Length: 158
Image 1: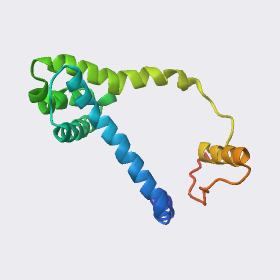
Image 2 (image 1 turned 90 degrees about the vertical axis):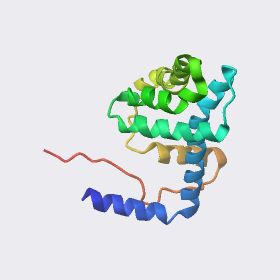
Image 3 (image 1 turned 45 degrees about the vertical axis):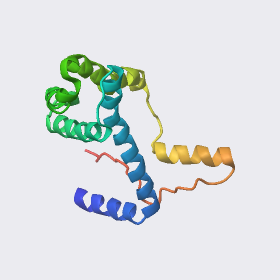
C-alpha cells in the first residue's frame, strides 16, 4: 500500500519537471551553504584553505555523521571533522570544531526551539494554506497547484 502511494507521488512529482529542477537547485544551494561553513570558520582563524577541498570535506563529514544513528550524528560528526579538516585546521582543530558545531547544530536547534509550541487546528496542509494566502494577497490563484500530490494522513478507526 505505502509503496503504491510512494510510486504515485513520485510519478506526480516527476511530471512537474520545472518544479523538480527548482527543488534540485535550491537543495544544492542549501547543501553548498552548509558545506561552506568550515571554510568560513577556517578563514576566521586566519588559516587558508582550498575552497573546493573544504566543500568536498564538508560533504564527507555530512555523510559520516548521517551514518551514525544518534541525534546530530554525535560521534560521526566529531570523527569526520577531525579526519577531513584536521590537516587544514592544524592546532586550531578543537576550536574550529566547536565553532562549526555551534553554527551548524546547536544554534539552529536553539533558535528553532520556540517554534516547537506551534500547533495547527486545520486539516489543510501548510502548502495549500500558503497557496491560498498568496492567492488572496495577489488577487489570483497561486502558480503552483497541489494537483493530487499532497499527502494526508487519516488514522484508521478502531
